[in-house]
Length: 313
Image (cartoon, rainbow, N blue to C red; front, side, top):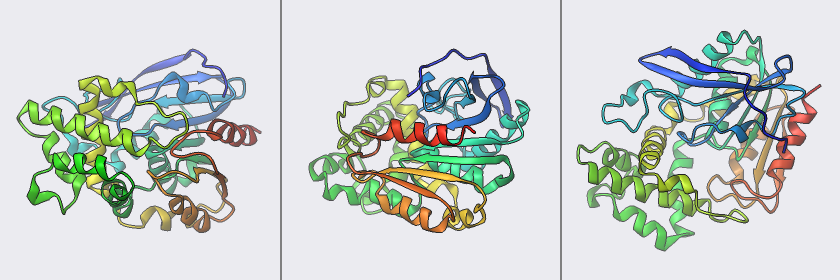
């Protein structure tokens, strides 16, 4: 990937509902505009998020989505109001930031949860999207959430037993993300912290097949664990607040927007069939399958760079 360059513009943007999102711009101020949508939900952006882009040719916009990173207020606060943190809110925030920066249209890059958000933004504002690059493709449907919270127990049975043991017995056959969301909203701090730690252990388990995997050290921070787990369970419990099949149906109207989908054959967190169905529904899309990759891993940097280089004009 390309080297990290310092931001040449940054700040907070008031997006309403008491939220301010953090944004920064890197690369060439006169370059081709692109926006990066981070994963999670809740992981926040990092300087490395801009590395798939040639800093000489791109003007790269990074942002921390509502409730995470440097945005305010954080979802880990006791009084955090998650009712104003939905996919529709995030899509509106991205569009408001585009207007704030005076950008007519931009390339959208998203990975993992960022792929879901990128799809939602493109479907909502197709006239503002020049190209789309998605990695570790997800659409956060109820089926995908059921897979990642329950069905994957067939691959990691010991770890799943520990994961589900944190949930009250009466709720273990239901929506596990929703059950965890309730634990993470408990007035008892000890309950919240125990649930956050258990959720983040499971997060590490289901990405552990990535070549060279190491546990994410950010999970060692209790504040980050709580913030991350609250946002992930909030979105997963509600299937991203999207009607079932809405994104798959919506991309059929994006035939004129070029897209590259990058996915690992060994991705057990988000199986390849999600990217495959999207590819078949999106006329002219390109699907790059990385045989030795999982939810990231070998080949991802090269594939993302190849896509952005190809769209750099």
